[in-house]
Image (tube, rainbow, N blue to C red; front, side):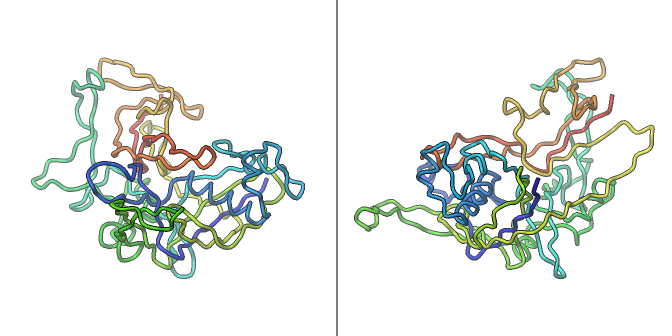
Length: 350
């Protein structure tokens, strides 16, 4: 088993198109997802490994047993949704400070501005989810604060997990994102007829690209079920409009978060999603958790990693929509709704 960390750095702006189509109504510009979807990065990794070997991509697409340099390449890197003997985790936003790279994590969605207030679990109410569901609520106050959107450092996430406040220096939100992480740039484009090499009349479109700062990268950890991973090319086209990215391959250095040590009488636990999630049947609830109407409220019961849990409430952001282009079948992929990163589930251990 080979483990590596691949680091992608921008040599130009990047564009990872949101789920809306170019032909969508409204005339508004298409925004860019960032960090990019995992499928996009996996495609770049496959391409980089193939280019290093000089793969004939047409033959790879047509021949299930295509072999190069003695390697059955479809088995090596997979094909379409099958990743073969190659696997990866989610792409992480990473910032270089004091000569070293540090990964950033989504801010938990129970944190709000105005002194960094936290949502609390309210009293049971009757709603569409059940007879007595405990929904999240803000503490009583005059102003209406906005959710904190952005990223936090490992130190900030560890403080949150310990029930402490995250200091401002560990948060990247609003203007600090624009100053220290990346900027969004609006672009105007026009469709082109490749057969005549002329512009198509009236076919204008607008996009918003991402321009990362020079100290910002995308990192992803990969595992390969073979002795070695082929050294990739140093440059690869990543995302929409074929923008260039540099590739650096490193030995994986596992990130271990310091976690709180509850006492033996503690039964409450908050599950926090660090990456977007796609659950069974595209549901918002954890897989195989079933609703139970109890005297003291509506709950959801199930088992996670061998631990029996009861979910009492959840804080979930707006669904993250992902689509993209199916390179193998030359058609758009179905749009999927994901639970966004930073969502939380309030549970007790049974």
